[in-house]
Length: 328
Ligand code: G3H
Ligand code: 13P
Ligand code: NA
Ligand code: ZN
View 1 (cartoon, protein in one colour):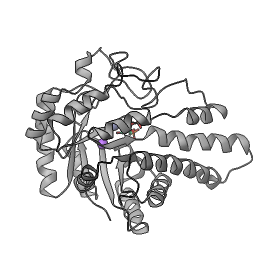
View 2 (cartoon, protein in one colour; view 1 turned 30 degrees about the vertical axis):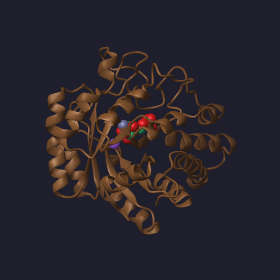
View 3 (cartoon, helix red, strand yellow; view 1 turned 45 degrees about the horizontal axis):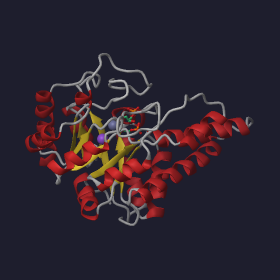
């Protein structure tokens, strides 16, 4: 059944587990996630970015997710807008069957410029009011995702945005988080703790200096009833870097968020864990392997079947380690 983020995360909070939110752009990703969820008996969050919506089309996405719900009727599914940039994105998502939206007011509508606190409160409050009228859930974001190593609001290609930010700009302030939630009435809050999107998060295995898991505990203590969200939570596992590079890839050595750090976060209030990059790497690693090992192959299914299997394996691992397994 398709349910809201609020329903899904309220149960996660009661039982003390976390839920991975996997990004979805196509049928193969949807099948891989739901096969894993079915095998683990886990509830799932499927999230679509603006890029995913324009890639697949809103009508295709809606029917795809409805098809998955019909194929796996016993699995609770939430369809969530990832990084909505304004009211239009969020409301059109709800109209297309999304049961939850992220209004990311931490950045201006161009999604590049860090926004003022006043702008963030104002637009998030407005979206939350409208979404709640029609029964959809809302995630807000306070703080800027970026690197505590470089002081840069990181972009996905590993280069930094213009202008350095201080450590305090890059981390969510617990008192401000409490005020933000009281004013906006969001169901879930994305916080900044040193992670960033994409594969190039850290230049070494992160410690408490560059991955501030302690901050999550402090925020949770201030607002225990709001569900905390960790963006940029791919682990960028070494075995997938190796797979890609063994078959012709040239990804420079990089480090993601260790799964044990996420497990720690879940023990201190993290309920939604956003993962896109790891799934992309699982698929791409297998595409490269098939392309190199079978250069005469041109049936796309021969690429997509091992790719889906690799992604399913990754999703299963996260359902198990986050405690999602067994909670459908
Ligand atoms: O927030 C970033 C997600 O990984 C989605 O990425 O905008 O390329 O679909 P995308
Ligand atoms: P990753 O790039 O670490 O997978 O993060 C995805 C994300 O936060 C989507 O909102
Ligand atoms: Na999101
Ligand atoms: Zn994100």
